[in-house]
Image (cartoon, rainbow, N blue to C red; front, side):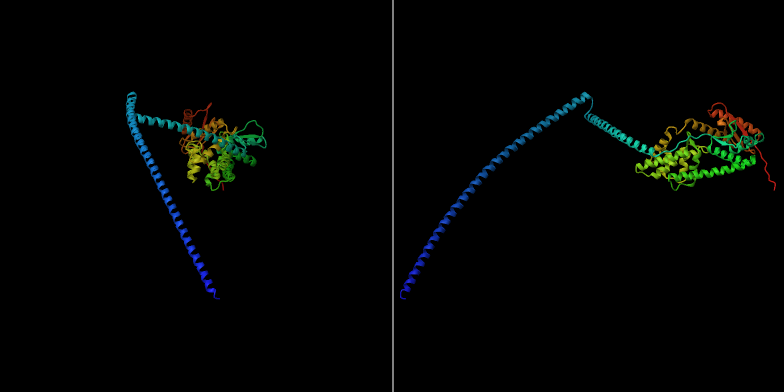
Length: 474
């Protein structure tokens, strides 16, 4: 136990010695690390100084280069300005020479150049426009032919030429004598009441009713058939039957108009226009029945309008009414286009329909595509082979003009052109025209026909003045 203190002292002494050694060794390491760090910092500073010196030298070199380029640019700019001044002087010199050569001032030369450029631009634009129009025309022609061909293909209207006579069958040839009557009084009364010409010849069991005016011819045919069926033929009975036949024909006209409106699918047409449409049944244009023609034009126009995505109903309406004025030309002055526009305006038709009537012969400009379609459909219907006859229309116009001329004299009540226009019968009012005045009137009408009409052969003028007393026994 006595040895423990010395042992502990020895151990403590060893620990202390070791700690001192460790402390000395750590200080040495720190000094060495500090020396190394100082050397590194010094090297870094030296490197940084070197880099800065290099950058300064590089910047100086670049700045010197920029200065040299700037000087070169300034020199080039001066040279350009000098060349510009030289060119300006040269330009003035050339301008003066050109003015002397061309005899133009600079302003005039400039204007001339502008005009030349404008002309070239205008010519190029015109050429381009022609090319575009030509291409558009080719495309339009191709599409139009396609549409018209399709419309014609879907139409199969039967076409018959209108004649100016109607044949009435007889039960026997003995009936011819009863139609003529004692001393011809029955046939004269019939012709005076109807305005038709009754032709009785050697044709067996047939009498021909002739008249250029289809309504009068139809009235005469219907009245004669009823008289033949009834068997009582005398002047009084003739007038009665003729009045009934006239009423039936008028009713048939309304029915024909209503049927045409129904067939074409048109709604809201004024009743007076419906009557005029029905009257087209008894009118012809170059031998073509106007009602059938108008219905055909309406169907064609409707098909074309449908293909072009337009109002087909409006197109059919304008087409059905486009020739409505032709039923009025026998009674009023003016062309059928003018009369058609007037009556359509009177009965409240739309501006598009009125333009279809006014423009279908190019008498007025086309305002809508509908009117163009109507005109095209009219041309298709009227220009088909066999649809029309020129000679018949000329003949009808001459007879109508003959009647209209004679009707303009005072005291004339009725005028009938008969015998294919070789005779005109004028019925005068007995109170207004006496026997002597009737003779003078015959001469005046004949002389006026000679002056104003062109006709083959001769025309017989007959003025009829008749008084009649009527009473009843009760």
